[in-house]
Image 1 (cartoon, one colour):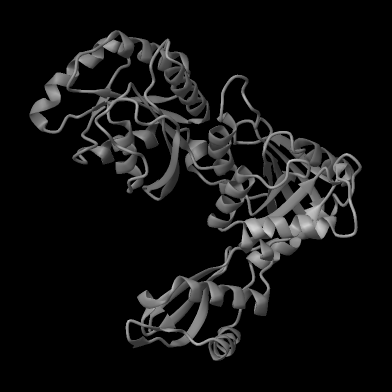
Image 2 (tube, rainbow, N blue to C red; image 1 turned 90 degrees about the vertical axis):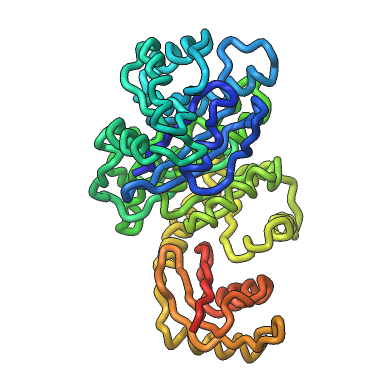
Length: 437
């Protein structure tokens, strides 16, 4: 089940980015007194009452803009609203209602999305009366708060819980064994791959519309395991919108990655390994999901003996960590090596769930440290005394040392690479935590 998504909508300079930063707990959106600083949608996540949410900070929404940049901001905001489960309509409590406020109110009402009217910049109790005018918008009750001073933020978030459908707040019984997301840039063959997989394996359990908008969940049985395959249909470039792929796909991809165990990131062999491919892969790894890299349209590439090796090496040179993730060269059109994807998914899924014995880890630490002892930092001799695996999916390892804060980044990377060389974990992210012994 995907996390509910909340979008903050409002005119320029009403405090959207300040509220966004306050909710996610870090300064992720740039805040300025100048109007229109936020040009694009900013994506973040937060936890409230034990439930994880996605949050979108939009650029200042200007109805019927004439300026090209303002029009771009409007389009970005419209896209964010389509992704949202709840809209936070933010207005400035220190001003008066304007024609833009009235148009925004009508726009939100027409969206048919649950919404909450929020009057910001009400810093003190004696300022509450100034917000009464916003009843004139015909949106019903409102919430007052001060994003700058962290006033009444919790009351507003409680109201968000009340607005969400129960289906988004309650867990459902999992009726599958492995969730595989097929993601990537437009026109790399995601939907075609899903269709080939479903046609090839005849044991289809069911096919229903997924909870993530514009994605389809399909189910098939392979090797006595039920696969949930999430096809990210709808990642399409909107005409006449520059850079829309980057921003639109980021929001949708984040939601889909939340739901999966393993992500198959598809790359177009003709176009090569792009920055957007790299960003999607990095997010999969950061989220602790299993990863398979699928290079499609391999039939269209002129080849010699070393073509595949060189293509793989180019990807690794661009992103060295990908040395430890499987790469598969396929042609969906000719059904070349497509079935191998399910085998790799099973392997990666098992690697995600692997649990090592503490004795195995301690034996590894002795070997790794003897080969390359920790450096002396600030006159301190660092020693790694023992370690253990504290969780799986993804595997997290705790190494106990006398000076955990002094472990250099390059030594942490050495330990991670050595652990992979020793134990594998191919296709699975691993994380190291250095702790005080």
